[in-house]
Image 1 (cartoon, rainbow, N blue to C red):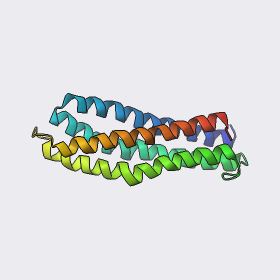
Image 2: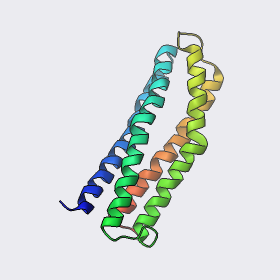
Image 3: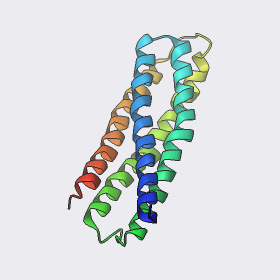
Image 4: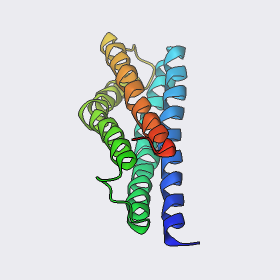
Length: 156
């Protein structure tokens, strides 16, 4: 197998880990919140942070290294290849939302959840922040899915 295919495979594995983790995390976090059980919610909130460190960040590393090296090996200039440029812009927009909105929200949610992890009452501020996390998380999830469509279809 040539280096292009090796790096393309690494890129695709990174995409699967990244998008898979954010989709699955949203699913089980939502189900945990629906229980309204403080212990379950606090546990789930802690797992959101841990899985982001391992799978979201790990997926990003594989996605970026694999994609950039595949483009290099395939003689595809990043900025001059429209589908790579558009896909990268969509991915970067998702990253901006994560850095500017979601990570700070998750930190606040984690702090609040430590306060009710032993079964105490869940404050209203948790639910307000949770709603924002769900909205911005949905947007930040749709952007990489759009990037996948652009990349697979080589749109542009």
